[in-house]
Length: 123
Image (cartoon, rainbow, N blue to C red; front, side):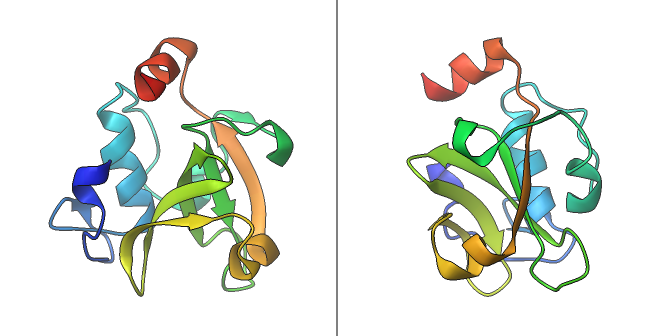
C-alpha cells in the first residue's frame, strides 16, 4: 500500500494513475485475491460481514456518510485506529477514525477478506 500513498484522487479512477475511494479499495484488495467487490462504495457497504467498530481488524472496509445522503466514502482499516483511503482533496492517505470529520460521518464496516488473505495482509 505504501507505493500508492500520495496517488492523486481521480473520480472513477481504479489505477495508480489516480483513484477514487472505491477504486482504491478494488486496487489494493485485488492484490490479496479479493476481486469480487462491486465498483461503488454504496454497493461495497452491502457485501461481506458487518463488523462492529470495536472489532475492526486490518483489511476491513470502513464506510462514511460525508455528504449527508448515505454512504459516500470508504477506506481500508489498517489497525491502530487508522485507515487508508483516497481523499478527494489529498489523494491516497492514512487518516485516523478518531478525527472529528470521520468520527462524525462513520456509518459501518464490512469484512470482505477471508482468514487466508487476512494473514497475507498482516504478514
